[in-house]
Image (cartoon, rainbow, N blue to C red; front, side):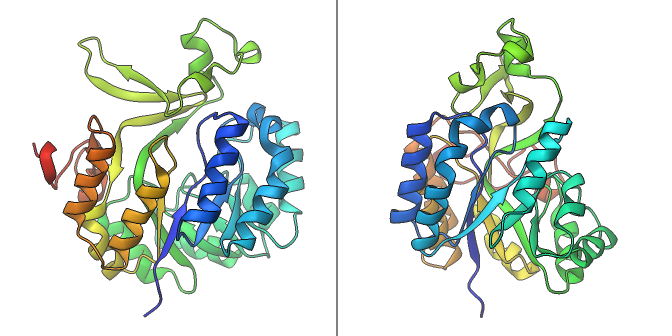
Length: 305
């Protein structure tokens, strides 16, 4: 049986250089993950802060035996960003993840990854993307199990990937929510999104946790946690499982999911260990079970509700 792939997704937040460099160094040296994503997905203004380090980071990850995928912007808005996308698409010997449909044309004819920001909702769309060279498709977060099963059955040669941990991106906009919340214009944002390392929490008027804001991006308040569904996803044909970086000890998080995917631990132990790391985490798995996305169908550990 082919070993399931464990994937470390791209860093969505505006972490400083040292935090990012330390993160990737630990990923290279301490974690048994198969694939690591680099690159900026949310805001092109962040790119200059870390682009100069990427060649060394990519080399270190590849020398450690990791497959490296370069993730591109989820929303391409102007000529400068299109030019950046063209430069990335011409990078040789590196797998690129398309997160905006405009990048599919640039990557056509060469193996690439279709990111979860592209609406791969049905078999015809998946078939079209595979015909353009998609090597792997990371499915949108809101798909229920029935749709995942249908896409797995229709995928032909492509791998199917599903995110199993981390806040879920729900929307992205040309406007910068972080700047607006601080009374700033997008062009003079002072990079205030970097003050919230896991996104800025948003509450309703009665102080109920609601969403999280990350620059142009709106995320779920809850953390997607699909440990209880791993076996069902594998049975459906999912080959790859993505975890999304947060400020938690991601080495420990990745090792928990590695052991779960390999059948060496239980979902109960994974969830309980996650809560021991940060006991105010709120989990959700509603989308997978055709429920409101913030719902949690499976209830394990000390936070059973």
